[in-house]
Length: 265
Image (cartoon, rainbow, N blue to C red; front, side, top):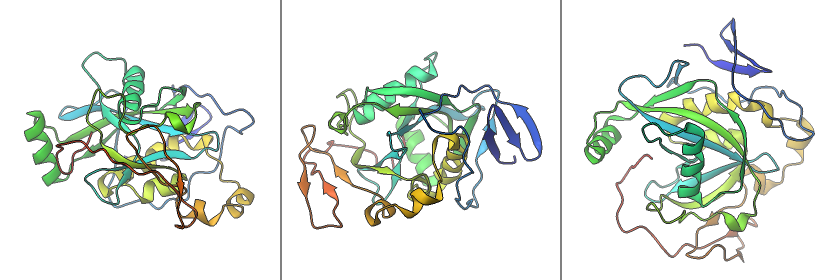
């Protein structure tokens, strides 16, 4: 299916224009529309669905959390080196999807100070790679092809001390580091089979991200390289300045005892 672009309240599928029923709330003082992100498309495609999650796919919610500087929260998984992602997780049967997104955000990051901004108007699906699919289906006792995701955009309204990768204690930790990233960096650092979904998500939410050329020229070297990296501690935060490009590092000393290698939430 052709790619989608959100402009005002319309979604374009190729040359066909359809009404978009997603709710839009723009940041104060931020124009509604920005040009689409200059992110190259991958060879893997993301499937779109307006009707609901297709059969054979696990119902899932994704969370795009942005700070007041319009950078996106990403975290690296404990057991998958050099792989960063936005928070996501399965939705329970009958659970309100926006509430499921807030629950997953709290469970994975400890964040509760978040303002709802928008909901993607359609479901996005991706297939698991064979090895990942076999491991997850054995763990879950299912036969899923992949995941069908409904994505939500939230604005972070709290202090960074609130971010705690140990979560709210209800689930085993999944992440070891976190950082605020530019949209193009979010796609670049994602695992390959999630890149097409991320590309579509960021296109839908592109009205909320500035691509102003002057701002791009003013980015610091640290921001161009991905911004500050925070490593989770057993407590909320313990800041030390390291001679590593000016990055602020937070050491984590607690790990979950067992986890499935290659786990996808």
